Every structure is written in C-alpha cells, then in structure tokens.
Image (cartoon, rainbow, N blue to C red):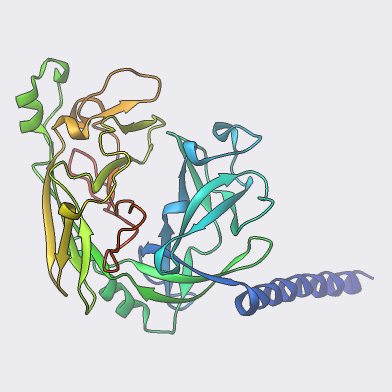
Amino acid sequence: MRKGLIVALVLSQLGVLGYLAGQREWVRQRGEQIYLRTAPVDPRDPMRGDYVRLSYGLNSVDLAQYRGKTAGTALSRGTAVYALLKAGPDDVYELDYLSDSAPPSGLYLRGRVSREVLGGQIPVSYGIEQYFVEQGSGEAIELRRGDREGVQIPMEVAVAVGSNGLGVLSAYRWSRLGIGFEQINPTTTALSNTLNWDSATIAQRSPVLVVSLQNVSDTELKIADNDKHCGFSLQSLGDTGRSLSQADKSCSPYVLREADMINLAPGEVYRVELNMGLPRWYVTERGSSTSSAIVVSAANERFRLVYQAPSVLPGMDVPLLWRGSLASPAFSVRGRVD
C-alpha cells in the first residue's frame, strides 16, 4: 500500500510538470508575440547550463502606476498581480498599469510581488527573468551587452503572451541604442551640516554624472535632448522605504521639437555631464512641500538616470527617431554603482 501511494504521488507530480511544460509550449507557439526591452545582469548558472539573467522596467512598478482593490503598500510577497501592457514602436511594449486583478481586456502579463513594498515601488517577477541559451554562448552575449565600465546594449527579448497572462521567452535581438555611465566626484567624505550649505557648496560637493548614448546599429538614428536636458530624468529605487521623486516638473511632458533632434551616425556618441547639485535634479519626498539636492537629503538612497525619448506631436514625420527609454546602472552619491 505504501509503495503504491509513493508511485501515485510521483506520477501525479510528473503529470503536473508535464501539464506545465505543455502549457508553456502551447503559449510559445500560439501566444501573442511582443518585445520587452531589458538589460541582462550576471551571466551563467553552471549547474543548469548557460543563461542570461534579465531585468525589466516593469520589475519595479511605481505606486502611481498601480490600480487595484488592495492598497499598493499593503501588497504582500507572493500576491498575484497583472501588468497591462501598451504597444510602442518596433513592437516593444511598456507597462500601462499594474493591478491585483486580471484586466477585462488588453494584453497583460501575470506576475507576483517578489518582496516587501518599500519606497513607493512594487517589486514584481513574471517568470521571464532568465533566458537560457545554448551551452557556451552566455559569455558571448554578456560581452556584446557590455559592462558598467563602457557602453551597455540592452537586449530586446521576444515574449509570447498567453490569454491567461503567462509569458514565455522565445528569442532576442539587440537595441539600436546603448548607454554608458560614469560618476565623477562622488561624495566619499562625511556629510555633516549639509543644511547649512549654500547652493555653490551643494553644486561643488554633488556628483557629476556623465551619460553617453551611442548608436550601436549600422544605420543612422536620431535622439532628442535640449539645454535643460529634458531627455533625462532621475528615478529613486526606494531601497530605504522613502518615496522620492524629481521635484522639477518643467520637462513633464517632454514634447519633441525640431531643434532638439540629434543625428547619430553608426558608432557616434552623444555625451552629457549632469551636476546633481543643480535645482533641475532636486528631489522631494512624498507629502513634503520642500525639495533639496540628493547629496543633502538622500545620501543613502540609490537612483537611476533614465533617458526617455520625447512624445511626438501628430503630423511630425520622424522615422529615424529612436523611441523608448534606457536606464543607467543604479548609483548613490557616495560613488556606489551597481
């Protein structure tokens, strides 16, 4: 009797595994095919063959993009959530909003809250964070992707999406635009009496971020930026539980003007230096009416600098304009770059 019970349990488990494998294969063959832009991190698992670990913008969702019955701050680890997607250029999709119930219509990915909700960000995993590749090819992919010392080229992965929100990775391609990041003058000394600093001291003691956008394709493309550097924004990761956002809203929304367009030939680089001590990059905490430089009020926080292509008015013909967003590695004012 005991032996028969064990056999039955093993067969039932094999049946479940077979069903799940069959479901994923069905979605791979029949699901709606989209692309998600991503940057892989850390390459191989020697126990399971080569894979590229992936992260997406929709792995960390701002509370402002959440719509659900349960308060976003009350979502617990393991809670099922649904990311409604919206189409962008080149079939690259982005998050529209996140909910705790399946949307009645539209294309969505089903995921789960991966850890505690802190700092206004909801962490979500979707089961598409690892892309397995042929044995021995993971290192080549990592070399093409680049590292934090040079230009990083995001992968754009093909995802088949089922009607129930299941996502299955099927292929990949490379973004036509890469991003390089360098931090100059990190604040390595003790930060004391920062509230007594004048604006000149703040600018002097703040890090300068050097961002490079490179055309890594074999054809010409265009990007956009202006004197205020409206093409870039500062985003907090919320590691410490604080909800911080960029205080300056003069670039929201950033609408394309002809004068802002920048031509990039293959291999050409657009490089900017951004002083985080200038008011353009001040941050404010949710519920506060004041703002300050991150070296003053957020020295222990991590941030990303994000390039976002501007919105295009109807009637403007800009076929070469690169659309989408690219995020820098995470950094803090103390010089830590992840």
